[in-house]
Structure formats: C-alpha cells, structure tokens
Length: 402
Ligand SMILES: *[C@@H]1O[C@H](CO)[C@@H](O)[C@H](O)[C@H]1NC(C)=O
Ligand SMILES: *[C@@H]1O[C@H](CO)[C@@H](O)[C@H](O)[C@H]1NC(C)=O
Ligand SMILES: *[C@@H]1O[C@H](CO)[C@@H](O)[C@H](O)[C@H]1NC(C)=O
Image (cartoon, rainbow, N blue to C red):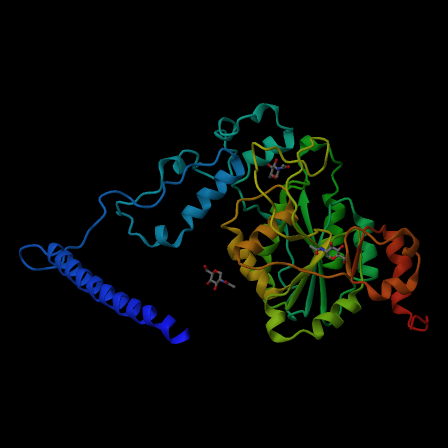
C-alpha cells in the first residue's frame, strides 16, 4: 500500500521540475528582451528621470501654530538648507506670505491667518502677534554668577513682586554654596498693566544678593515660554559649564540634598541626557474656554508630547545647550512646559518620570509629616512660611525617620 502510494508523488516531482525549468527559460528570455529594450542605439542603459516632482506637495495647515511649525520644519530642513541660493527648488509660496521684516515688531498679518482671531481671548491675540520675537534686552544680569562652575544651577521662575518667595528660597533650599548657585528669572511689566513701580527695590535686591536676572518683556503666563527661551540663551552665554539645572517655580519646596544625592549617583551615560520630573503623557489641548490651559482649535491641533510639569524639573547642563539650539526650530507655544516637551521630542528624547517630583502636591494627610519631606525631591506648592517651616525638618538630622 505504501510503496504503491509513492509512485504518483515521484511522477508529480518530475512534472514540477520540468515546469520550473520551462519557467526559467521564459524568464531568461523576458529579462534579455527588456534589457535590450532599455538600451538606446548608442548601447547605453537609459536612465529615467521623473519629469514631475515625485514627493507630495505639503499643504499648509489650517491651524495657526501647526502652520508656523511647518514653516520652521521646512526652513530648518537639512535638504533645503544645503541647496545653493540660486537653486530651482524653492520654499513653497505660502511660507513667505507672513514673513515680517522685523520679528520683534507686532505682525499685523497674523489676524488674517487665524480664522476666529477676533473672538479669541485677548491673551491669544497678543501672544500670536509677538510670537516670532525671541530676543529682549537684559536689564539686570549676573555675568559672573557661574564663574565657579556650579554642580547644580537652580533657575527659579519668579515675578518682580515676589520678594518674600525669593527670600524664603535663599534662606532655605536655594542657599548658595560651593556646589549650588541660584538665579531668579524675571520679566518686566508694561504701563498698561498698572503695576506699581518696583524696579528701584528690585535693583537693591539684585545688588544685595547678586542672583536676579531681569529681561525687558512683559511677564505673563503665556510669556513663560519666552522666559524659558531667554534663560536657555543666557545659560549658553553665562553658565555653560554648570553640570545640572533645576528649573522650577518660586512656590515649590525642593529637597536639595536628595537632588544632589540623586545626581551624584548617575552613570555618565545617564547624566548626559538627563531630564526628569513629574511626567504627563497622553495629554492634549483643553478646549473648555474657562480653563487656564484652554487652547482654541484654530491655533493648535494635535496631541502634546510627554512633558514634565513646569513646577520643577531637573536636566543636565549639556542637554540645556542642546535644548537652546533646538528651540529655534520649535515655534513658541503659549504653555511653557508643553513647549519644553516639544523641544525634547525634536531632540529625540523623552522626559523620565520620577515619583519624587510632586508638582500636584502630596496627599493632605502627609503635608505636615516631616519624614515625608526627607524622601521627596520637590513639591508644589508651598508658601514662604511653609518653606521656612519645612526646611528644618530635613536639615535637623536628630529627627528619627528610619
Ligand atoms: C509678551 O511680551 C511681549 C514683550 O513685552 C509683549 O509685547 C507681549 O504682549 C507679551 N505677550 C503676552 C501674551 O503677554
Ligand atoms: C549649538 O549650535 C552651535 C552653532 O550652531 C554649535 O556650534 C554647537 O555645537 C551646538 N551645541 C550643541 C550642544 O549641540
Ligand atoms: C509618573 O509617576 C506618577 C507617580 O509618581 C504617576 O502618578 C504618573 O501617572 C506617572 N506618569 C506617567 C506618564 O507614567
């Protein structure tokens, strides 16, 4: 039974072999013919050059920020950049439409570019009018603050009237020493904002403590991104050798010891790309007009990259220099921590989540537990009085926490 059953299999094998050989002959013939057809009379192979462009023409986005980002992506595109200036390949026309002469003059072509400009909250109108300007004069600088090449630079976002917040930080977690240097990042106010003039007092404070940096732009929530960009520029000029930067708000409590301990234990590889904080992922713009983080559809569409909450995050000085470079390629976005996430993404990095960064505070029942503060890195928010109360809890080591 078994032997007899093998006979047809053998015959089928022979037939398959014959068919395969025939097929090979046919393919050989076809290839030969097409090879000959591909040669012109002078016997050279013909190179086919496409007569039209074979990549997709980019259409401008309907959403204002996204379109501005498309523009920057093309301007910084390495292929476009390497073309000679008389090249036939030009940037698409729509990119040139709204290029102002001076990026620091308000751009009055913006209102025609945003479909619902006139009904947007005023802060958005204002932000987009000035969005291209990234340089403002410094009124107070501390060019020598980093002469000793600090291990850790604490860069604290503050506002001119917050004298007490700054003083609480100086007396506690931001106290300058051999390895830690603190600077406060401040903007100015415009007469239309009706602030009393505190510049005289600020001048005294700056002389006394030598830790105040002041730029001449209007210090508002939406301009915090500008504060970040100006800080990175300042850092690259005045403090490029600081090993690490902690950037945070003036109403946080920082356990400086824990931060230094963490940094001291990093491997070289990890240290170079370090960026850690309280990471938020899978977020996107809020569409409810009543919320602080509201962003209208007409100006931004898409998801946010992973970003670390702006209350406080920690990164390497070397990464700060890369962020400063790449930030030119990212259109300013009115929410500063999201913007930093966008810059990281452009560098191909993601922020690392660390449970010690509590930018949304800790549970109420732990807030007066001294031992809890020994373990965490940073907590938001605390008043100057809280900061002065908490500081001895982490410095007085006779307190037994195990
Ligand atoms: C940001 O600062 C610039 C310069 O002072 C100012 O013209 C603009 O109104 C500010 N933008 C916002 C949204 O406050
Ligand atoms: C930043 O850009 C400058 C000039 O474009 C370049 O020389 C420098 O190496 C860059 N720095 C980093 C850290 O990428
Ligand atoms: C980061 O860690 C905190 C806990 O410390 C957690 O609540 C949060 O969801 C984490 N975020 C991400 C993106 O994993």
